[in-house]
Image (cartoon, rainbow over all chains, first blue to last red; front, side, top):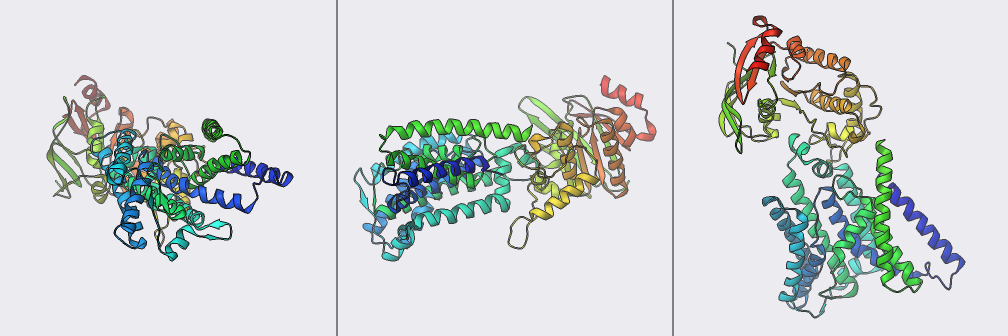
Length: 314
Length: 244
């Protein structure tokens, strides 16, 4: 079963946390409604981006520009909303469309010039990071949509934030596309063996461009959700998200070489990164512990995944 | 002479400084098995890829049933009824057997969702009936876990299931056992009875002589010898393959 390992690891960690919280309810407030709510709010930021980045990685390409696209497109949407009084219902889809266009451009450059997408999107990351400062500047910008938009994308039902519900919806949608639609099959084929895909009549260019566009759109989507949640955008807010997204994917069992992975794995990978962050916060550990733990987790996850794959092949 | 099913005229293909095919004429008749012979680098695989639509010729024309056609992609050749078993099998290691067999031609239901169960049933059936290969117990197995012969069997099963009017086989027996090879050759003959013509690329002249009706020997991208089975012997074929 794809994502099987990570599911076991995730459940094990959750069980430990819950047991710890039940044993020490005052010292380790893991099960407090405030903590649950904060964690569920934090997961979608990296979750949405990881779904897109993961889909693209399965197709055999990278996108390092998602962090910059995340901020750039949400600032565009916020500018439309604030300075030009455009409705959030129009500004947000426009922002997402721009994200898709940026992703598509990354793809076109990658394919047209037969370059590694790693390099193309590294350039795009810096380019759009600079464009944020050029277009907007270094100050924060407000994002105040109407009440319906605010509730639907930034509200909560009980302790469960809407953004988390949307993440679940998108995860299931991505899973369906990947496992039960032709596009998904072709993404696996193109990422797994490009030459074979061509020989059998699949157009790798088209499949990859679709994946690039989806990665860009999901980065924008995540940016809009974050902006709606805190009603403000910091120009440096997206920095580092690209590597966190790749980390979530790798922890979730995606192969860096493409052709392998599952949306459940990506979802759990993103959730695991934030669970660890949350636990460290609750234990009042200094911030750098997060890097230490996530760094170790990435390497351990890949070792475990390779071991399991080796066993499946033998 | 009746109109060939498929014909190429004056086809040339150059890769950098290498002339893979030069001014080549080649045709496949109805109910015919053509043996395409020649040493390594003769241009046999290039010709197969060209007929499959994944390599475009620099010059030359392609005719199907006597009509000029353009073959610019695998989809075009598929429309002409061509199926290919590639030398390198063209399988994706990280995908299951079923997904490989239906790669690019997935069966879908009414809402465009994949019909997994239907594809599994067909895959199981095709693998069991075409050339029996031991060790493939489940069509859900990852192709990367299969042996060379088993991979070739999957590639064969795929081409056989989607069989059109012409089957191109590029070294299909290189990883097969003696018995599996016999099965495949018998199958090619059976397909001829069903009006499916084949082109068999092989280094094994005995296999070729066993099943083919006509032989084309290539060398350095040119056709150097052509004959029918009733006018040649295996010795003569060997001479032309080895000495030209």
